[in-house]
Image 1 (cartoon, rainbow, N blue to C red):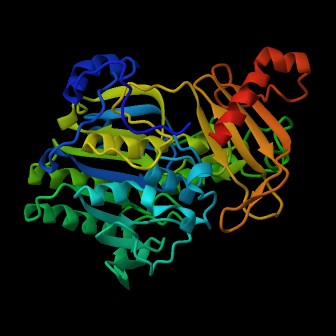
Image 2 (image 1 turned 30 degrees about the horizontal axis):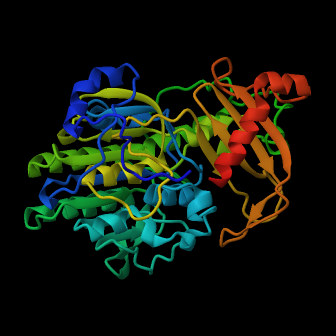
Image 3 (image 1 turned 180 degrees about the horizontal axis):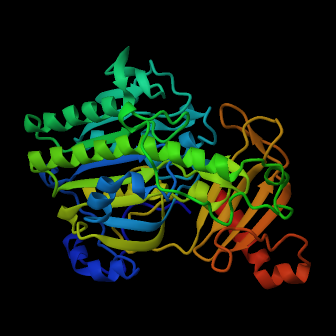
Length: 467
């Protein structure tokens, strides 16, 4: 069911009161529920820096020590961070709208124009008096010549790493240099303007790293990365219990090592940019009252189950790094939050912090509230009718995951066609089998399925898909 971004009303400490719960959060407890956000004077509203990286999986913190030291060490690390669709444009549209892809309509990378721009975080902030800026990648299939709605200052990147094509405030041009550095410098200039513009600001910053072709900045091209011997799912020799596209996968440990090393090298430049943002905010005196959120738009497989890439219902594809820092809101102490959280929670969180009541629905909930979900819907749609994996959806909790594959596909506009018939199912006990090696539904009897609780999981998944 769609929910508003206002907090649970079961208890009512102030936002500043969160600070006193840091020890509980560090121990894995949920934050306390907050009273519904009242209207605030614009001067009291936090600035917002939202950093979204591209294809960054969780196990990449070696490449981002400055980011981790600031946003996790002096903020909150979410240990169960997910995206609700492990694909770029649907995930970013969920960040903007706080909605699942089946509700915002951007079901694949070709359907970016299906997003209702009235539902977006940037629309709400701009109309509430925020200065808004976008620097980097926007949405796949978006024409670089089209200005991004509700951003007044922008350098929109056509995805690339070197000498990129940008739409800079309405003018399409080639900007020389490494694009992560260009994005960094444009963001810094946007922040600098706050010396003369006293409006609160929102900066959406989205470098192309660590997306393929994963071209590193020259100074990091030869950087040695820590050795990696894979994990039990790499490449998983026996995949007989998996769907056909996984059984036929051919990626090896060597492939996973190569992709991993390339991703880590590109992320070093992102880390430099994040450090520059920190230093600029400190120089401006804005560190305390800037809400900073960092997330990957999806994860990535390093030859897990023989796969490299995203778009699959396995943990490396939908689990992502997710950090938040806001010292002025009591979230600056270096804590750990073990709740199941997702990209759909970003828009409700930002609007809650800004004291803005949205006039469009959210599926996510504010991370500033005490809300704690027991599971999450993760979904993905096949684009076109070619061979390969089918559309799927998945019930994901901390201890189990149930997935169904369907006879459904989408066209470039995101329109869904097909019978919807379930063609394959997977169930994993994530406590006993965290690498998803044994599909307990493979050749299971009806009695075994009942023992696993499959009928109830299937009913819950069906409800989630239509909520």
